[in-house]
Length: 325
Image (tube, rainbow, N blue to C red; front, top):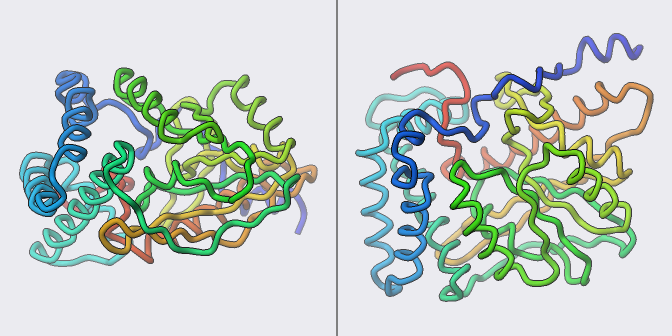
């Protein structure tokens, strides 16, 4: 196949000024409510305090209450969960749709509360899975998605060696949440973990490429492109969707592999860490086609993770035109 044919068949890059549906952006209600919104500082701190302060025996009741409140009071999130899960599980009647949504909201409440309790040092986690083994000089880009206990996963060292891990996170909608979260992550992560918010600026990208070439690790989300960042269109469950070009571009620039990694919640305070086969990004003459192919492979791994635990897929925005209100 010629390079021209490959470009025609490969998923196309999207203009960076187009905001993809899953990119974090404040809705009209979030802008109006400010810190009182579900993404605002007050709600974040209240959830954090509540999860960390409740006695262990009360946590199941609090999770069930939170699920019920979210189901009744957040119609946009309720609709998005139901619509997105149809791509995974197929269409269903109203009763089954409601059950799917409630199961997802309950899974999110458990993952979120255990994340906050872990950050506060009041919960011990049992972690199983095969550890990632890399040569000391071998850097890698670890990619994951908003699936399972991904928040806790960002604080789990992927190897037993002392190399630095650079964790890149989306920018938060509320800057106050981002400042508070950054301080808590740095305190919980320890000296090996370095946290960056956003990947759209050249200076951050340059530092991360240099770190990868030194044999360090970069961990980042691969399912939500920022509005001003480079995007590549791939397919998820047979439907077109914009993905960030950053993970594949970083790996290609540094000459390292991409390793998909997922942290699933299996039982109470028990996690299963799974590393998937590495993805290489060749450094040939057709960078657009190479990035597109690598991004599609990342999308396929994210699809694998969602199919494994569909109710641990925490995407609360409509990804495709809704099938019902």
